[in-house]
Figure (spheres, rainbow, N blue to C red):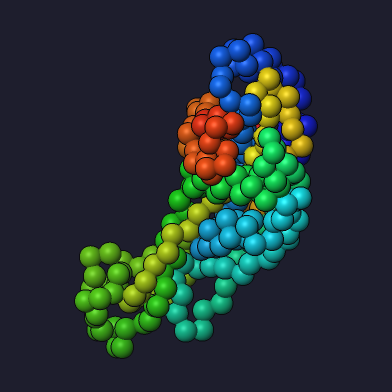
Length: 250
C-alpha cells in the first residue's frame, strides 16, 4: 500500500491528530485519501461505471477484489467514426478489506469507502481533451450539419489527433462528445480512529494503461490541500469526521 512508502509521515500525522483532534473532536473516526502523483491516461473510460458502480456491485460486507480491462479511445485517436478502432487499454483494479465499524456492518462500511473514493476521483481527475463521437467525413468536403458539435463549417473544429494534428484524415462532422481524463496511478482511502491509529478498513484503486504521463510536481489539483469536505452516508453521520485528509505520494 502507499501508506508503507512513508511510515514516518504517518507517525507525524497520527501524533498531530492525537494531540490536536482527539480531545476536541466529537467524532470517533476520520478518513484519509492517498494518491500517487503519477497520472494515467484513461481516455473516455466511464469512471463512474468502472469505480463507483463496480465498487458497489463487486464489493461485499468483507471487501473487494476486481481486475478489469477496458478498451477505450483517447490515447491519440480523438474522433470516432465508422471503422475506428480503440487505441487505449485501461486496467483498473480495486482491492479492499473492511468490516464492522461502531456496530454498523461491513456493507455500510463498503458504501462509505466507495462513496468517498468516487468523490475524490471527481476532485483529482485531470482533463485530457475531448473524444468526439458520431463523426463522419464530409461528402466532397462540402457537407455541413447545424447539429454537429464540431466540423469544418462549425465554430469549433474537430481535433482528431491528440498529438501531431489530424494524422492524415479529417472528421468534418462530429455529433457527440465525451471528456477524456487522467487519474492517479494509485488511490487509497483508509479509515482511522480519531486518535490517529490506522484501522484495517481500506479501499485501493490501481490504474494502468498504454500511456503514462510524467509525475506532476504539484500533485495535481489537490496538491496544496490538506483536507476537503466529502459526502457521508447517513449511517456514519454522527461518528465520522466530515473532512477527509489528503496525502500525495511521490
